[in-house]
Amino acid sequence: MTDAVTHHADSVTHHAIPDAADKASNRRKQVREANVRYRARRRYGRSHMPMSEAIAALVFDLDGVLVDSESVWDAARREVVARNGGRWQADATRAMMGMSSPEWSRYLHDQLGVPLKPEQINALVIAALLDQFRRRLPLLPGAVVAVRRLADRWPLGLASSANRPVIDTVLKQAGITDCFVVTVSGEEVASSPRKAGIQKEFYRR
Image (cartoon, rainbow, N blue to C red; front, top):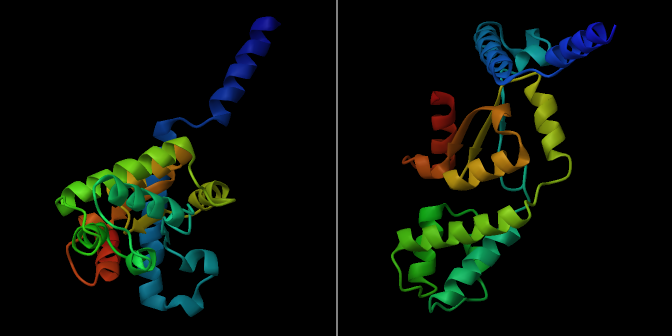
């Protein structure tokens, strides 16, 4: 009797918890279905399709969508400026909003007087930011639940101007890396304008 109960429990556990191979298989199936919906949408138009079929995939941003990190970025840049002989200016925070990592790295060098190469500045800021993320990840309420629920239905992507290590760290700590089929960082895109370049690279992948 005990053996039968144990066998049944093992069987339930096996079927209730999908392994990595099952998840990967489901993601591939979602991508195939998304491609079918995309072709159908182009052929027949969205007006003739149910909403669930008209959506081929969902694309997330990182900052302001999954994490509330603007203040953490600001603190990391301030720390690098203060520790390396620069001088913070009253309008610096506002001026750097929306900048890519090469842009704000040059800004810290050119406008705030940090006497390091932009590449070095970038590395120091990212290190300070990730240190804060490891202490406390500023996830927005409901973000993880929403991602997991949507990933069960559609292929998900993430396109962000954040650096690659930042994207990977956030997804890993939140436990949602496997929910995304494709992720693109702005530092991996050379074309301009940057936002359009990120979107173009995402769809290419």
